Image 1 (cartoon, rainbow, N blue to C red):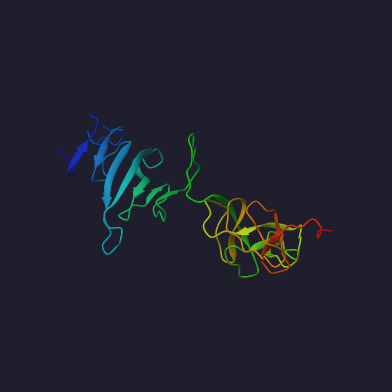
Image 2: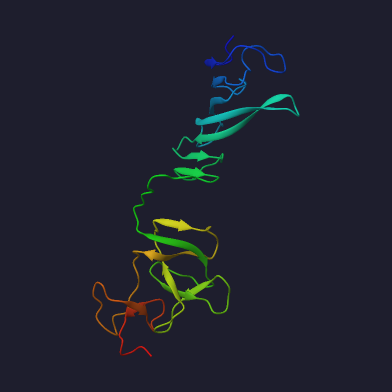
Length: 212
């Protein structure tokens, strides 16, 4: 007899002797009691904004308990977020594990940034240099032609590396990113080489006569 609105499975018995509906390879829809390789169910949690999540489960036989155990492999939340390897996806695609891509990853924005800590409060567009008093931290630039320059605070990078955290900022190392500039030392045109300015957190036009 069916265990839910739709139950499909091989015939036969499992090691516990239960007939028909616990053979590996079964397909269960709307329940978790079918033993098999693939199960689907709607996850209803009263009062949850994600009531009605669509969950893909995998059942494998546990030799130590002589029972089939259900493991969640993918979840589509009611808000459209998809989780693989996580039961609480916070993005449109949230993967806990490695991924392999053979095609292209297309991003709307054009810079690659890394999460880096800073003892200062930084705003997007700020030019940053390596903090000489700390390890793996950056501070806003504050002198001209600083060779320790390492990036610009990005507002919305196309690709983020590392982990976000308190006191961390997305520092763009490559690509195109908006930057604060200081035109006091010369008009800036497209294609000009920029260097750090005496103005805190800003860039200025490179002038070969000024560089020592």
